[in-house]
Structure formats: structure tokens, C-alpha cells
Image 1 (cartoon, rainbow over the protein chains, first blue to last red):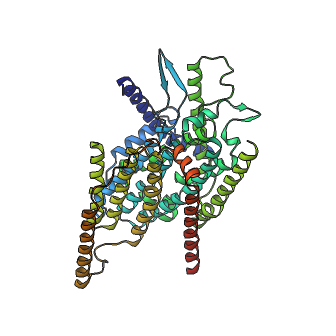
Image 2 (cartoon, rainbow over the protein chains, first blue to last red):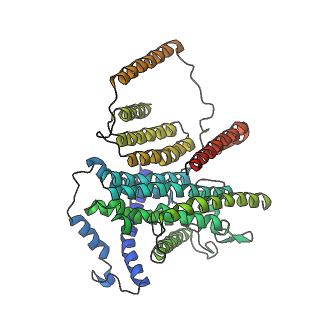
Length: 347
Length: 162
């Protein structure tokens, strides 16, 4: 491997890592602002103009707080929990195509860290690994409420992973590839051959199932039962303080960012935007506009996550399980059969 | 090659820790690490699909359920029942018999012929799919029915309880 490639990838990884963290930081601010807007309040407005420095203040507060490790907890695992949560949240971004190619001089740079040919499955693996952070943390706290939260998280994640996988199978039947780069390329532009190119118009039911499962996998309301404060004090992170708690909360926002990016890539055309090659712009400019388009979609999805959180009340636990096993899985299987029929009839 | 030996060492090391750790939850955590090293083995053999499926199914689902059950059972030293000496003696004899059998069979078997992989890209998704759905279609479908029957059996058992 040549050195320049290593440097290029290193810079790309650093930039994506930085963007993930900054997006997650400002998601906490946006969450509070959106909540305030939906509840007719003002929201944080003390730190800087419009409270724009609030995330920095929150971060500093988290670091300054006293760090408590309960004496009854299982020492090392108590630390491994939040570390694993933040680690699995961060590595998901490696296979997402952030844009087309940039040409600088004679060098062509792919705006994707790596294009492995099992890209979707990689994301799936990372998602399924994410539950360990919560489970280990909840168990190591040696607290009944934490344990209940952890167990809820585990059963919820496993249940919704199945429906999520089935909804993706229907999508794969149409795309015929597991590589996220190729899936993004197939959705080029907006309109071709008398139909929309974006997968959401070919797989509306699949997208609906996928987004519901994404809410459940990221433990967002209305599926936030693992941290249900009315029943479980604080859920799996009851015993955590200081930045370890911060990591758990932060991991949730990074997960939200990554799952928004995955949804935008799989179903909403990724970096593609309408008329991208009819405007007469240079390739580089189209690429940059594509990245902007992708981020616009991601920000919309993050807003959607928050919008739902402050609109819909939490499920009861049996309702959550019923929805997962008795509604979403049969629907996803029906979607696969329908997609198969359509794919063979309208070939 | 040295990478293979390193990963193989890790596999053996973690699987020994699974047996020797006192706490069952720690055992499962070591088992997760063992399966992770298996995933690396698959990737070293260029079997990407098998590797990632092993990762999702074993690490991401089955062992989560293992962990789930063990966390619910709340096993620790106080609740562990004391085993009688008779059981221990029987265990030692049975283990010794197994060891003798294993060593004897290893001695008889001798060196196996080295299997040469004709197509190193066999493990990629496309090639694996082609092989599974053309050459081995019937066994593949039969095994899926086997899994389905196991699933139906599990549902029936659960229904009987309530």
C-alpha cells in the first residue's frame, strides 16, 4: 500500500470521526431546541447567542463531575460497558459512501473509507454488537434497575433486528448487491425509465419497517424502554456518573447520526440529488453538492427522530414485543414475497 | 502465516478462559471473544460472507441470548450447589476416557492430505450464492426445512406451558 493512500484514508477517517462527534454534540443542542419548540418554550439560550455553546458547556460539566464507581460493581466490566457503547457507535461510519469522487490534480479521491462487498452486513454486525455495551454496563452496575434496563435492551434489539434484516432482504432483491457504494450509484439522479430512482419509491413498505426498527435499535422514543425513567429510575445507566454517563448518552446520538446516514443511503438516494448532471456544473462541484445533499437528508432524519420523540408517548413493553414479532416480521415477509412477484413480473 | 498463528493462539487462549473462569457471565464474555477470533479466521481465509454472518448470528444474536439468560439467573458462589465427591470422581474418569480416545484417534489418523482451494474467491457473496443455489440447491432447501421444523417445535413447546 502506498503512503499517499494511507494518508488520504487517515485524513478521511479523521474528518468523518470529527463530523460524527460534532453532529452528535449539536444533536444534543438540537434535541433541546426542538423539544422547546414543540412545547412552546424557548430552550437553552444562556451560553452564547441562541445558546449555541450549550454543548460545550454540557461537555465541560460532564468532565468536571465526580466519577463514581460503585464498590459493589464488577470493576473492569463497569468501564468496558460505556467504552464498548461509544466504540460500536463510531465504527459504523466506515462503509457509508459520503459522496462521489473528488479529483484534486491527478488524484481521484473516493469519499468513502472502505468499500467492502458485504457493506450492509457490516453495518448489521456493528448494530448487533452495540447491545453488548448496554448489557455489560447494566449487569456490571450490580443494580436491579440497571439489569432490567439491560435485559430490556437486549430482547428489544434482538427482536427488531430480525424485522430489520427481513426488510433489507427485500431491498437487496432489487439492488442485487450488498455494497453500499453500488446501492448509492444505482439511485443516480432522481428520475429514470419512467419511475423514481430512489429506493424509497420502490420499497415504501420496506422503508417504513426499516425506520421503525431503526428507532428501536437506537433506543429512541417511543422505544426507549431500556431507560424508561418512570419504571426503572434511569435504566441501564442508573449507576453511571461523569463522562461514563456522557459516553452512553453520546453513543445514542452518534447511533442516531449513523442510522440516519444509512437510511439516507439505502432509501433516499444517498449523495444523489435531482438534476445533478443537468446543471452543467463541474464534477468536483457536483460531488460537493452531493455531500451537502446527503447531510441535508441526514439532518432531516435526525430532526425526524426528535420530532417523533416529543410527539409520541412510550410503548408498554408487551406492546413493543407484539409490534415487533406479530406485526413487523409478518409484514416484512409479505414485503419480500410482494417484491419477488413484482421483480419477476416487471423485469 | 504469523498472523494466523497469533489469531489461533488467541482463539485457544480465550476458549481456555471460557472453561477456567469462575463467573459464568465472564465465561460467556470470553466465549464472545473466542467467536470474534473465529470471524478473523474466516476473513483470513477470504470467506467474507461466512465471517460476517458468523459475526452477526453468533456474536450478535446467539451469545446475546446466552448472556441474557445467565444475567437473569444471577449465579454466584452462594447459590451454587455443592457437588458430591462421587460426582467428581465420575467426572475425572469420564474426562480421562475422552482424553485417551482423542489421543488414540490422533495417533491413528496420521497426516491428512492438504486440501488445495481451487478458487480463492469462493467465499465472496456472489460465488457462494451461485454454488449454494445451483450446485447444492437441494441440501440447502432441506436444511432450511430442518430449521423450520425446529422453530415450529419451539413454538409448540412454548404454547404447552401457558
